[in-house]
Amino acid sequence: MQTESTDSLVGQEYEVEVGPVAHGGHCVARTDAGRVLFVRHALPGERVIARVTEGESTSRFLRADAVEILDASKDRVEAPCPFSGPGKCGGCDWQHAKPGAQRRLKGEVVAEQLRRLAGLTPEEAGWDGTVVPAEGDKLPAGRVPAWRTRVQYAVDAEGHAGLRKHRSHEVQIIDRCLIAAPGVTELGIEKRDWPQIASVEAIAASGSADRQVILTPKPGGRLPIVELDKPVSVMRVGEKDGRIHRVHGRPFVRERADERTYRVGEGGFWQVHPKAADTLVQAVMQGLMPRKGDMALDLYCGVGLFAGALGERIGEKGAVLGIESSKRAVEDARHNLQDLDRVRIEHGKVESVLPRTGIDSADIVVLDPPRAGAGRETVRHLAGLGARRIAYVACDPAALARDLKYFAGEGYRVAKLRVFDLFPMTHHVECVAILKPVAKDA
Image (cartoon, rainbow, N blue to C red; front, side):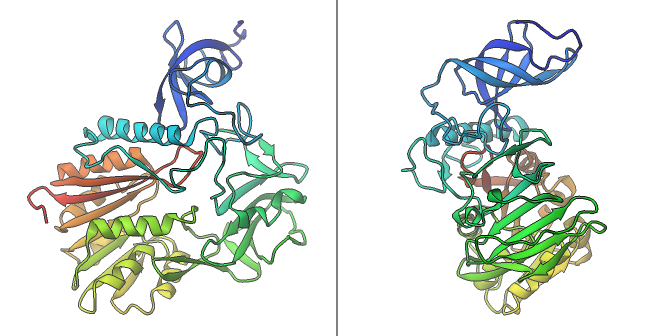
């Protein structure tokens, strides 16, 4: 196996034994010379030929794909999707692993992040190591659950829709995404051409029959006449302002959770798995145990999912304050919760708005921050409110672990952690951590 004459090692191949899973959908391996490889399309314990996809001779580590499996793991299956594999679509990380193995790998990643960044064992975090499947334990190996209700398609120079390759702007043309929910597949995005369009986002609400397509034209491009297989509202991303504008149809879709209907406007955030919203509401409410008369906070509240659940449970003498930075999401949240007089939604960044509210105490708090986490200053402010319970919803275990360490420094411990596999075939998980003051066990 020959190296390139330049400093780039792209294309270099190594025969390696694959080590443990790492955060991000790959496993760690080392060459005979001790060079670190992050290898996709491999499983722990396998022996593979790994081909470098990123890295130079001076790089601290290299990225690689397993292009040949010399000694396969018992957890390996043939990837059901023809567009999954080295050099292909980057959307799914674990198509080649049995469903149970996927959850074990995700659990190992969460445990490693807790240990390395928070200094916690699973037991100290109140976690039994289980990653709860959204699809049930009976999903057979080789079958792909169709769960993703929102899919972002890229469009190539010829106007063909596909998905981005891993860490690349290159488009993998597809005829169907296997993890796309039926409502997305029925739109037939892959079946038609999209001239002058850069990307197409397809949304199929799980709580209603609402369908929405958001088109991002190329610079100077015009919108095509959209004739899809199902009735659909069409939005356009403005070339100058980057905002989403209605072309025709409703500017929102309707979702359903905890026996309430939520309006989600113009491509706004909603969990992409049909069972995710109810699953997370249940976990948060079980952990917080709201009481009549509670003062509650819902931070990074989006369109009001948790604020609505709290508002239904704190009674006429309780109160809920939600804070959200997206102006459109705030408008939706206020609309969605207008029947709950004791719920108030404020617009702005949590770290800016919360100190200005004058609130110096709260009984319960839920926060669902973006992937980067809440951060040290927000954690410090929350700890100073003296809440008896805090529910932290996290889409990134590394950010969660960092914030848990900050909470520990402010006198809060993790009483219970639950981990949910709401993104099958990918490396992503959703965590719900319940925190309590160290001096209180209420």
